Length: 115
Image 1 (cartoon, one colour):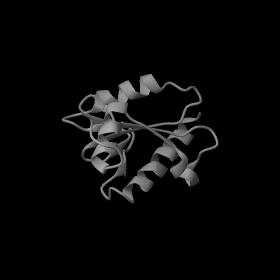
Image 2: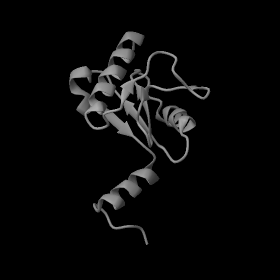
Image 3: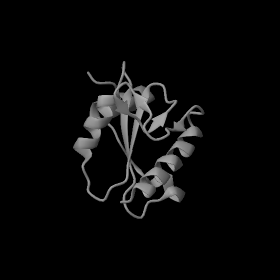
């Protein structure tokens, strides 16, 4: 995918996320968090990594997002496959560690807590 598509979808996701986390902002190019570049700023407790390429590399992306985590933040990869654009952010795919998903489901009451 083109860099322009990646930047546009990152901005679209930041705008969408701001409806839930009002401080969320699209990071200007080369914003650094320590030595790492981040995609979205203003999301305390979360690290969002936005991906748009054709080649699907979820392990690499998850490792990248985890590398940005500081003090108990939840690393989340947002993937925009082909044919999912700025007008359909709801259809992008969120990926997070399974253990974290299970904690969230248990805390929400959707599943019982583990034994």
